[in-house]
Image (cartoon, rainbow, N blue to C red; front, side, top):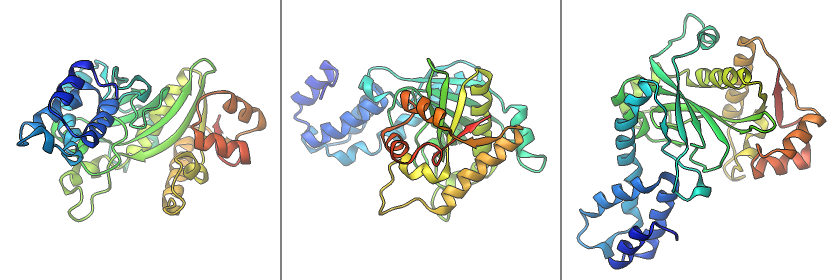
Amino acid sequence: MPFPPHIAQVLEAFAVPADTKAALYDLYVAMGEEALEVFGDIAEGIDSPTNLRPEHTVGVRTRLVERYLTRNHPLWRSGQPTGSLYRPRALQGRASGLAIPLGSIHSHAERVLGDDQPVPAGILMQGRNAHSNGRQETISFDFVADDLGDAIAIGQAQGQQHTLPGSVGATSGSIDAERSLALIWEIQPNVFKPAGERNRAIAKVYRRHRNWHIITLVAAMDWLRARKFRVYIVQGKALAATHEVNPAKPLSQAIVDLHNRTVQNVIKGLSLQVVDATRDDEQLLLDSSVMNTGLYQHVTRHGASSAIWRAE
């Protein structure tokens, strides 16, 4: 495991168990050297380094989120880009992606939402190579809570937490800049909807941000189309293949329906339409790198028309 040499020497000298080092390495690859610093703080409370267990790494992300947002949230509010929390896996923790402020909610989003829906204060963000799956050439659009305390609470809440912390959910995809192709493959929450004791601490801010899916998809479409990208969107029925879902735990029809409804509402609100991908579209997609392995195999077997829409 290629830890930085000075870290590897410390772990070896203190005889940290191999399974703990493996868990720590995963955190290092995902979130960089600061994850090691946070683990060091946790380790100070353990009587002996040899007693450090993988479960002692569980709290690293929670502590790191608070440090990350406390440092970067004020910069985002002033319009300054920063490094991302999550890092491209191919770079093995050595470099981060980007977190880029895009400003406030675009008027397009307000129009799609309608007069009867809340338009909360927040920071519209773009993440580049900032997704927790570690893939390169990813792009994501988040809506981070305007208040630092709210952002930290969201970032530490229970859920998938797969893009920038502080955002209830995001629209994510991949881009092929050389071919000006973009594939949106995810409109997914970062946190679970509060229910009972689960995520009670974010119940109020969650309600204010309940239209995150509309806001982030509009932001994605506006940004990509302004830069002349040909935009494709995964259809709801292809989400399971795209995310390589365990057949024993299939996606619910409610998730599929919500995805499709969100896409249709936003596309209609932007005066666009979506059409099934053609054979020409299919060849463009197969020749690019925007599809992951699961979706690529699905399209190869069944064709793109049953899995992907083209926005126009």
